[in-house]
View 1 (cartoon, rainbow, N blue to C red):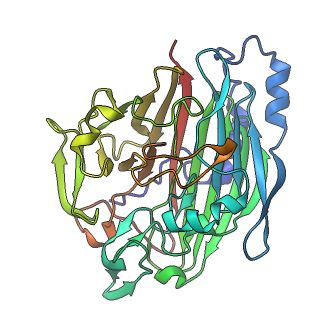
View 2 (cartoon, rainbow, N blue to C red):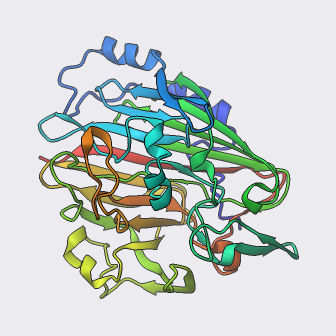
Length: 400
């Protein structure tokens, strides 16, 4: 059975279902820490408006890119640039109702193209493709033919190669629905790009919903069989601006196994139970509680328990000082939990913040690393005539 989620949030036809949602979804509750007694007219005005666009600067080749600001009826904001489909800022309230930016990033596209950033390659907030995570040796065999990919992580291929989806300019179309404001991004990855076969047409829709969630819906089609594994690489710090690291964040992962990796972070093929190990997040644990027991820190794929059941919970994070919570649901079989182990303070981001080790965490919903070379892992091969659809929802709240 195909492991692509063809019964995701969007169902079988993207346009038709969005129209159905727009017709049938009821306004969200105004019981939110930052909403107070917001009137219905405020919500109606918010959903009727489309995201605003401003210049985000020019790329190194002179292309001007835009920054789109999505706002919901409670005042939450998500800022996304069409350079790399990158989420640059996300304002959500804390337990006192004060909005704060909870993702790492830069104020201008030049930050994402500086020599220091390119060298360290953190992928702040970017869309990742064609294949998120690592492919061993930068090669795979498909239908009897070996394909050689760009190698950009030692001998391995990482996050789509030297110029993955995080470094291209996407076509952008701002819009809105009954759910909230949205931004539709499209990109065609040409046959042979970074070594991959087939022309791959990709659409990603970001929606900032009026019930305080950021939803990401991915769709892809191809004219040749090709591996596909799309994700978003945002770094979160739910108490950003007060705490420099994320070691006090309490994390729960809905997974009882993880993919064991070798020294190059390539899966061995073993799916090991988390019980009795520092990888056991089936109950909440602070990130810093056992990170010292994991060589290099957390940078592993967890095998989610809800695989095959449509949308299911992947993770829940709680930050005690701010009271912020983030719950992630997805239809993907895995989630890569990464704790910013390679950040070292050399990058200075928004507001002059230096991004130090463990300054943010990633929860990348995904298929397993190196799946094209691991026949026992869920399938990632997309074929002509098929449509890959997958969704991930980041739901925000507070705990007082």
